[in-house]
Image (cartoon, rainbow, N blue to C red; front, top):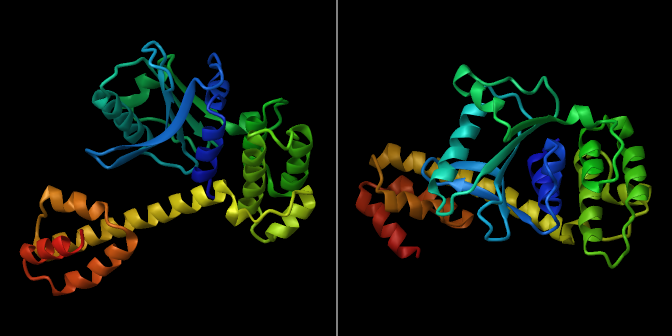
Length: 284
């Protein structure tokens, strides 16, 4: 089950949830917004940055990372991204960081170079396995529990979550909650159709593909595919033409997927860097 998009959308809908997970003071509603940030110098991508909505310089910026696959290099990459981001920001703030793992087995631990950073009070590690049976009145926590629930428990837990957190139809959080609830089950139970899931949860017959959440996930998935295509095209161009100018690399990184596919065919006929320059000029 892919979790990156689900967790990003969940934390974007509930920006107070990471504070609850880390057992830090929970900010007032509207204090933070979540966004993904790219560290351009290295092409690193931070999972989520909790950015204060007010100009108060005492409010810390928060770094949120969900790591659901074992990775021996995770801490080195994460702290590198984090400190480059802080270095590049015009407004200097205190910071906090939280890494979320499904369980302790997934956390392979830091190398000695980064172990000391985990002792800082502003850094937390959270293991969702510890929350599996924790009673809660927060619908975001309930959805996290649903994400890690065993497959046989998914439908009963989703039904219980829906009953416990039924929101008024006019509540702006209602479509967000229902989208997340339904989409989690779509990911966890791909053998069931959307109509079967809706029937089990007694959800209104709304086409998931028309919801804002689904469209956001689809857009992000397409963007991931576009970035992978751009990386492939750049490798092919470097092999054929040698090092590229930084302006050319930046330009190619911004091309839409259809233009990248066209460039992939055209580059087979390129003989010099001038051919690439001419092609880019013809495709503003």
